[in-house]
Length: 408
Image (tube, rainbow, N blue to C red; front, side, top):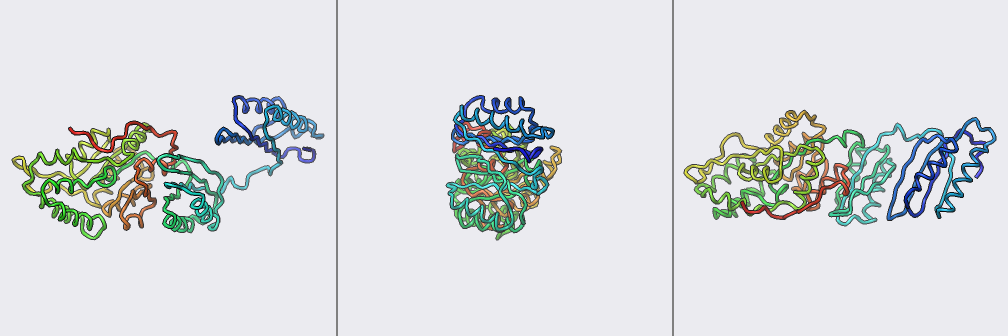
């Protein structure tokens, strides 16, 4: 390769081949000995195959180009001895992309096929975006990728990706790719059908023998067809006379959502504050708080007299508006701006909370919630939400993941 006539232009060196220790060191030493100025460097390894890009400037005062020719020869000889492919390219002095806006498009699915990813890429291209970088986040329990996208009509891109998500059965989130995304510090979750697989009032209704009536009301309330507070009081009245021991029996049948412990454990290890706000009841949320090590837990209080439920709820009901208020109160107490909060829920009574948070995630949610939330996750693993936060699979704290809570 001739470098004369291009003195001072950056030289992009691309190394590819089987990875092994010391390759990066050896290349940098050759460049250092040649007096090259390092401008940029990026390395990727896929299945033990290395791709290493190094951008350098050679001495602009070397009018003959001899020094540039010498370093090229040295690198080519080194690559030959290491069975590596070496490519050189003179590139423009400055990147035209540097000042363009960037967004992170996170895609996850089970499975995530080439066809579905092609549809994502097509939606990005058709709305003026250009994929700058692709990072694999995980292959288990779902496949997830982060695509860094430059430019484009973001509003149109979101609309197109919503259609792709629906048509291909995958989940897609679009976020500004900056420090704000990585600075999320508070996660607030719903409980019933989110942190746990059950609706606790239905567990109590089974004990009271009125399950069918309660389920019918719950389904309509979660779909947004009924006022939550009125429907809650109506359901609780059906539990009148239930003995207090039934609460313990119902609690012992709670099934955590798959990935729940991993989700909470990883967030706590990364320094997040984790809270639950529930339209359910404090005997259940207090137990979950202790069992999972949550920072805050809010729910409704059942009135108990002489060891039996009276059918009444004490104090203000944790309804749709109250959930959003509690999110703001917890954030203020923790000194976290709302832009750095994440809310997770599935029902219509979670909508205000999802809208108030910096990122609202509809988790296996009712249609009315999926239609309004920023982000949807439809796979049945709570820890899949971590990928929407840009957390890679290697950083997830996996451990024992029981599907049911142990007896007290």
